[in-house]
Length: 283
Length: 283
Image (cartoon, rainbow over all chains, first blue to last red; front, side, top):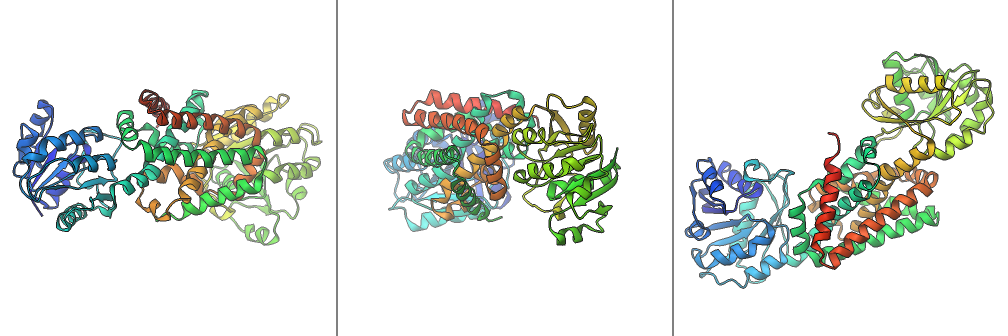
């Protein structure tokens, strides 16, 4: 259990962390801070909020665990601002979708003795955004990456792992760069594929989409994601995503070329390879 | 209501047509034929089967509507075999995913007076195959293309449209070539995209898939489809699919190039364009 949990800039994920920690008795006290005054006002009186701070520094002063729930491009600046004001031994984490740049920058921020930054990335979300839509069960059975640095104290890492597990998540520990390579392939590449497919179809007759079965619906579902959030993710993880996109481009071009050559053995081999991979998903 | 319905080579779709027609009182008598003797034996006694014929010709002799439910690469040969043995005025249709080659070939088969072929393509299916898995509700609220030729009698077209509507389908009438262009984009292209994405990920660490959220799961779901069925579809609709694949390749390459150039305005425009298209789906 965390004695004092601080959530900075709670949106969907941050408020879900607070709700889950409160419901599961994992935080003694929960302090939040939000940038906009009207949000701070609205947060007062939420059952998962004990105190609303006026500044980030004030929010973290006595916290043993700080969660930076801001969008991915504002996490570094927020960590820089709060790092000197942390309590000794405090752990700071975030919920950003990219970890390399954030963890590298955070390692340069001066902190009090024993305080440290360890990245987190809970693979949970919703088409909805905003703290109002947070859910205490959002992390149940979902993967949560925890990305320590080489010099992260073992006790701090264990505490953060146990916190996410207590919220229901399946914790996966990976170095920040490995995390970014993995999510470039399993999350950011599918987004680029779904967006491109939606764009290709968007260039055709708009009524065609209403004739489609569930296949097109499923294959393009994530194309409806928030554009601003995804631009930030692609900015932050550009290099790893570029590699994943290049690999996909090669696979797709090879499929097209096989079709052009009427090479049915090659088409069959690709269909079977894709099926074997997809059938290997745990249900 | 159809006086006498014949279903040739019933699999998932064919048996679903028979079940739906029986349940909704749309067929007076239902005769089936299957190629394998053990399947013919198993079909005897099904509540949606009144008679099992030993040959295709015997099955269609007295039928007013014949449904060729064979795989897409065997429909033409089956139609050629039964066409001369049809009753006068009989309508033949199929349930194949590609319509141009089938409708063109069927137009050349000699038939008795008033008999005709009109293609059908119900956009319904299942990961399962085989007549045992047919469902009487399979066509409810699903699109069913009906693809007449220029000289198709209006009364025959209307009868076929009404038959599919009575089974719960939303009927869309289109020329065979237009149908093939549409499904190349809304069905066959998504299959090639999902298969290629699955292949790209299959080249990486196999454990990564277990870390993915629902996005990757949805985007690749149809990659688990039957390889044999899809090879036949790609063979039959090669030219239209090739055009759709080329368009997708251009969109995806442009996305990759924008990322390579860190052209965030272009990335944002693509994300927004894809989102606008996907948000336009009727729920």
